[in-house]
Length: 103
Image (tube, rainbow, N blue to C red):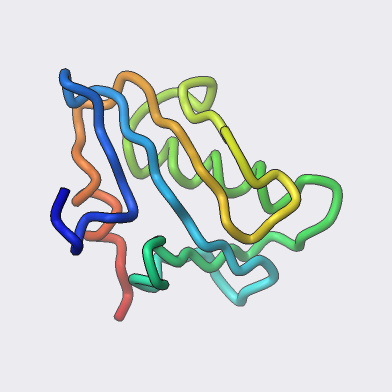
């Protein structure tokens, strides 16, 4: 795996992505910021209370990748800024998320 692609993995079919994300809740708007170490940083407009930020993240990713929200699964990091998210059944590559980058 190339060092520039450390923040994501895909299976052999390319239809399942596993993303490593660094989340900043409570931002002015939801946006992809760019690389943050070996993760991709996403700012979320939702507050970090009672799962609101996690729900907003999953909804945002479902919209970006064009899949139903039930196919976006938070695998690790429910109470952490660092999250591992699995997206199943997508025809899009991880570069779709990079196209959302504002900087």
